[in-house]
Amino acid sequence: MARHVDVLIIGAGLSGIGMACHLVREKTGRSYAILERRAAIGGTWDLFRYPGIRSDSDMYTFGYGFRPWNGTKVLADGAAIRQYIADTAAEHGVQDHIRFGRKVTEASWSSERGIWTVTAVADGGDTEVYTCDFLVGCTGYYDYDKGYRPHFPGEENFPGPIVHPQHWPEDLDYRDKRVVVIGSGATAITLIPAMSDQAAHVTMLQRSPTYITSLPAEDPVAVGLKMARVPAAIAYRSGRARNIAIQRASFEFSRRNPSLMRRVLLGAVRAQVGAGIDMRHFSPRYNPWDQRLCIVPNGDLFKELRSGRASIVTDRIEEFTETGIRLASGEQLPADIIISATGLTVQMLGGVQLVVDGVPVTTRDLVLYKGTLLGGVPNMLFVLGYTNASWTLKADLAAQYFCRVLNHMRSHGYSTVVAVPEDDDRSPGSVMGDELNSGYIQRGDAVMPRQGTRGPWRVVNSYFRDRKQLRRDAIEDGVLRFGRRAADVLPEAESRSA
Ligand SMILES: Cc1cc2nc3c(=O)[nH]c(=O)nc-3n(C[C@H](O)[C@H](O)[C@H](O)COP(=O)(O)OP(=O)(O)OC[C@H]3O[C@@H](n4cnc5c(N)ncnc54)[C@H](O)[C@@H]3O)c2cc1C
Image 1 (cartoon, protein in one colour):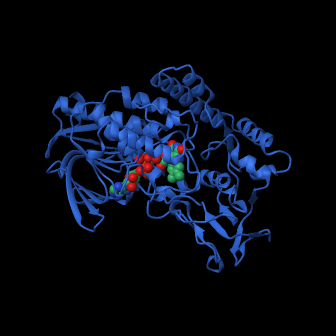
Image 2: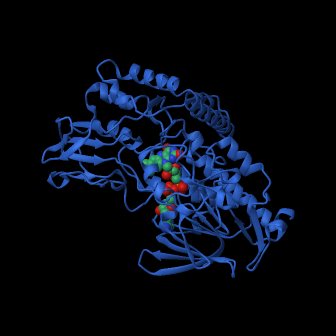
Image 3: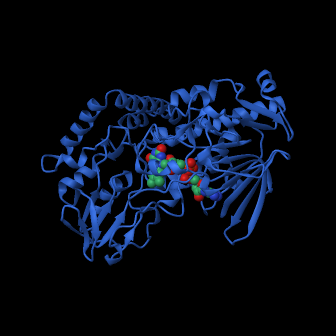
């Protein structure tokens, strides 16, 4: 595989594979390679192996726009998603372009040469150097090496395993064991029903509740269309359009009518958990969609709680003890195994150090142009999907936009592109701060790009507005500056009139 390519993608997860497929499908004619630190395709869906791992987005919108998801399940399990990504790669001939076991550590742009020089460390420890015209970060948004796990007082006294779901031991035997899962997010909510059939008992211990909503495990419309033998591509397109609209409507309705939405969501939970369970455990202190909504298929979590095989406790941890966890209320939770489903450590660009013309660049100081190009960094695109909708919806749009820019550059003979912000285009808040206030997003403030104040610098997190901006709006808008290799970057006025 060549050490110089037109486009170098970092990461072979959902976004990196999608990006490569778009490069092929949209006939950009550019050579490309993917550097992937792991040994397999799939990213998140290869890394996370805890029991029950599944999407919490519906698969019509979590699947790629260009390749139907043929299942009828609303949420899919990790293995099925991994397979879908791998099959998509195979169908587009992407595998042969991936170099596995390469962790990118630094990427350095030279305006003089008009190229990126990328340093990667191979599994064996050797350093490899690649060059490319365009760099694309598809590294996700968290640190692969360590999940977020606070230190718990007295944890050294607890004799059993303390497991983080990001590093699930293959041989963890929880049969007939008392398990306490700390957390209230999608992972905790998935783990409870997945473990409670074998464990002696599973307790979900949360500091504060999350909004949970139940959806049918099988999409009745998808099942109907399949039975009626409607072609997969048509069924997928219509299901996807329907779900995008429902998702957005539910998000916007929550923003406009938070107390009504809260009543609807809590009413549905009350109907499922029954009278025996205290609704305090399901009544968050925040408004719907201030944090991501958790989805349970066919109310699986509620069923386990009703059966008594699992229970839910809302309290603070005082300390770990030799027999479990002592809570602030004085209650003692007995445990043989403790799962710390406490989340992710947010990281941008997979820890890659960016350097532009010899000056190190920090993602926290940057703003995103149209939510995709890193402001002030030439020839570089960064894929950051939605957190208030399916990640893939944005990843697809970002890839389509990138292909449009590449094709535009080819037809005008440009070789460099950079979006240059003005000083007051940047706000002090993080790019996701306006949308969600989950713990990991607050912790991520230290590394995430800043939110823009206006125009193309403002990340809107709305599929419909992004679709217009990325698929239809003119490429040349006076903010993007194009150049022809190296020193002759066009002045702004010239690029406007080009
Ligand atoms: C448990 C879990 C469940 C989720 N469920 C959903 C969901 O239902 N819906 C949703 O929209 N989102 C969900 N997400 C968010 C999820 O990460 C995205 O949906 C999506 O998988 C991101 O794809 P990606 O390719 O951008 O990033 P990742 O899946 O994170 O892939 C990044 C890839 O880049 C590689 N990489 C990183 N750094 C480097 C480096 N320095 N050098 C080389 N390679 C590198 C990684 O090894 C990995 O293969 C979930 C996240 C988690 C953790």
